[in-house]
Length: 519
Image (cartoon, rainbow, N blue to C red; front, side, top):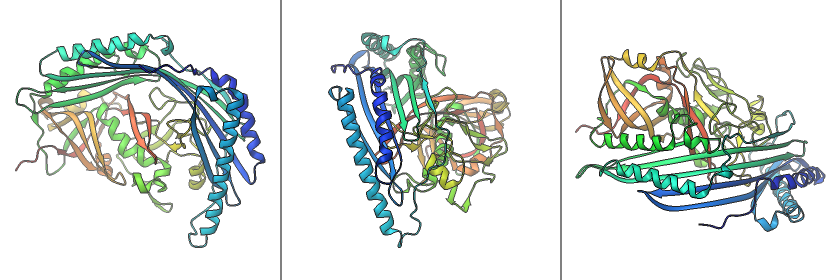
């Protein structure tokens, strides 16, 4: 077990005045147009067990800061970020390190500005960076929990992992592998800007990850992994979560489902579209890939093109889907940091108040998630969608709790109306086109629907479709809305991994089945 650091989130109280003072002094630097500093501390406890045996545990903490500056005649960004250690976290040493970082960010901004000016003649699209105006706020937001992660004994975390993974493997000899990871902790981040913003936000996070491999003698193995978590305390593990299940019950259910699939036939692929009913868990990944990412403004403006693709919703500022019908009138989608889920926060990494962003309203595409720079380009208000994995990383536009909106039809009724089709249950792996205009997403399991009844169970299949075709063909939306934790959304270069919330209700549409192709 690693030696626990003594850095605690309370340290920010002693450094807040220093950060505010340094960022205000940045205004005196040559041609400085804007500056901000983010300082964050994270404390985490974690444990891992496999097949009833303890594999590791730890208690760790980290502190880092990030600086953004706009400077130069042709204003451009300069960034700087780094982690620091406990010995550097006293106010005097910290002030020296952050001041040096501010000077480096300023030098980089000036260099970028000079290069912009140099290449402007041959690249007329190069322009100054402008930031849309926001309300400048000072606020403090505390973490929400019933059971403080800091009070949970580390041995209890490991003992729980060991016990549950042992029970998973003990269900049946066909369980070849059972793994459990648990973490719980607190994160606190301070944001100060030269405009006068000072926002101090804390959040708790508790998460369990289950992985199961089951295989019958001589058969093909079946794999399942899933997450349970929320931005709350240890109560999440005991049942205060989207599933309303303890981690123990959640893990055993996933194990039984995996064992059931070892006896199922492989899903046959289809050459044409069939009626499909997709459950909320599957729709979490679907909305993530075909609505969430393509409505992030930096992607749409092609600032990610080299390494993450573009967006089918915006070809250019004059040729795009804004205001156009891209889905059935039954389909609405939004991104809302105010609701519970991994995408919850009060202010984003630019100090912009978080708000609900209505992405699709009754089938019509309405707006992109943005940051201040991208809002200025698109000539619209900032909507508070900038986040970074760590304070030392550059903020990006990230989906929050991005979901399909709830409908009014009971899911059982949606299935009962299907004469012949398929029920697609729980997501697994996505494969998405470069501009997100079509998708292929695998499911944990698929049921045949015959005359409104679930009949045969299949495994290792999913659906594929053109994104717009799928959305336009939605003819039923359920009333079983749910938001699920997605802990591993990757974006950026270098890569940042962010937790987001995704979900929605049951949907009915048309798509081709993927699976075993008949010869």
